[in-house]
Image 1 (cartoon, rainbow, N blue to C red):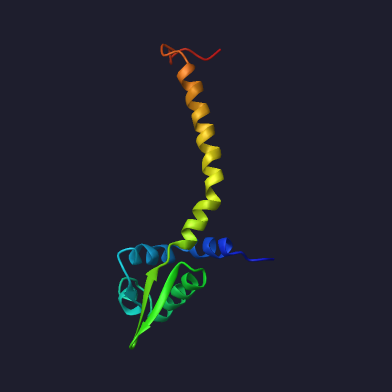
Image 2 (image 1 turned 120 degrees about the vertical axis):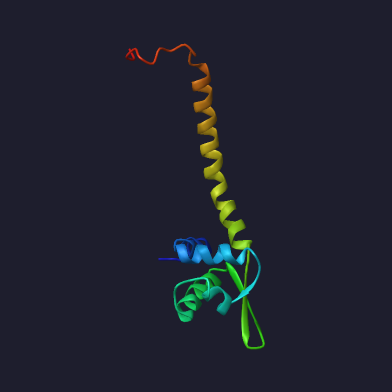
Length: 116
C-alpha cells in the first residue's frame, strides 16, 4: 500500500496528543522539555510524538546547543486544505440548495398539524 504525504499528515493528526502539541507550537517554537512539561507523559513519549509530526512534515526541528527546538511547519496543512477544497465546494452547494428549498416553504405551516 502506497503512503502519500497526505496519508502521513492524516495519520499524524489522528492522535489527539499530537494535535495538542501542534496547538501548543502555534504560540511559537519550543524545546522538547518545555513541551513535555505540558503533558502527563515521559519525555521519550513526547519525543516519539514529535518524530511522527516531523516525519509528516508538520513540524521542523532545529538543534541549538544542547536543545532541540520545534516549530509548526504550515505547508502540509495548506496541501491538506487544497485536497479538502472540492469537498467543501460540494457541501456548500448542497447547503445552498437546501437553503433555497427552505426559503420556498410557506412561513405559516402549522406545526401541530400532521404532514400530508
